[in-house]
Image (tube, rainbow, N blue to C red; front, side, top):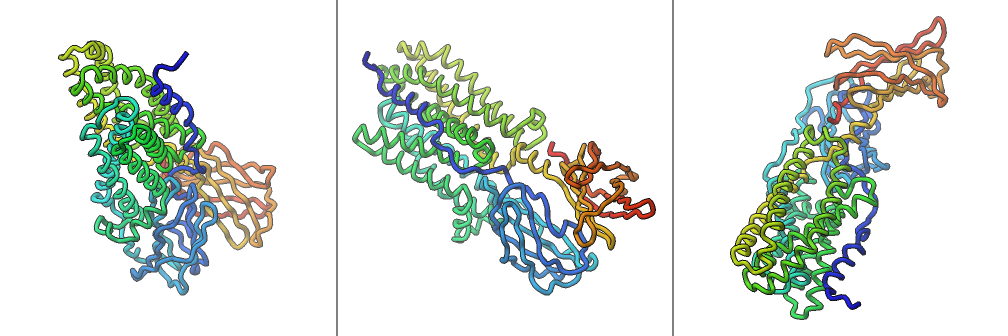
Length: 535
């Protein structure tokens, strides 16, 4: 039998044939600092031969500086990136006193991370002014507005051109045509704003080429390039006179624009990559097909009764499939990103998700009313139902814009998944004396139940044969007296104590008691910093 609806068949084939088209190279989570040498707050006897910063994932350095005790700032431009650790060569001739190591790096999901650590040579002194990093609200507001406009341009503009080319033949209404240049402008501006945020420079730095170069160097640069091409294709489709060119240019723009969102960002950077990147793509492309059809549908219903009713029929048959795929992809991404229900309330990312869900519930209720109460009468030509349906579509569009505005706030909120990964990183401290040394590791490095392990060595780095090892933890500032946990020797030569509970975050004194013989006991003591629990 001959297919009576080739347009619908082409769209269905498109949806099933491109699920895996946006797979790209693996990326990890939102970067978090897991270690620094010298340790934050450490006092060393001599100038360190090297500085290092370790992160939960590979990063690209943007700004590395050392603030000297007299307030002078030295740019650290000699460094080597080894996997997820930055090994930095410090300036020569560092003097006594307190120094501040400050950094700004960009993680593989395209988001900048900054911070500082303090160490002292000889003895602590006055902490030099490193210029505490404050939130640049003008840059953040501009980023949020640009991201919201980018979403509007992609889903209303590119999605709308696709709709009038494949689903609802006719001329694109003016909001759809206006969304294309708006989205293109927002895409370009987002690149410069991304660079400003990465470098930590104010909004006035937008005229500096360095900001644009920094933005292009992040993973978001690939997203901008793909979106730019997608908007150009959609503009070509909007102006094309040949039907075939209009259709295939709009389809290419839809695919490229939706795939662009899978090239950067929290969701696309999550693991497993084989699942998250296609889920981001499916989520984006189904939003574009659904949202993009709203304004052209309302225009067709007002303009041409018969054509509008035919368009309404095609829309009502296709959109349930889009909404189903959209919901499935959204649930997958939410489960991966949030992890536990508690994170919905305890993290900013979860709060944004709850706000988005509330708007989606409102939108779903309105869609249900439209489908079951207005679609039938409007399809049969009832004028009042057509008017009410057009007004409902306008309200739906406003709710969708609000959802875009809420989703744009995710740009500034690391997901609970990333927070949990960072919190699970171990805390460690190297302790040495004139008789022995120990490398102590606390896993995970946050408050709560932990495992403590240590490698005990002689001063010449040979394994030390001990008869017994115990860990003693105390927190004088919190009024917690020493608590002793006996360690057990492991097959790899390390000593381990399981199920140790460190109930509070902050600096803990850890002492390693090493019984070498019945008459010789070596005690090694230092502080280890325990992070707060992720949630």
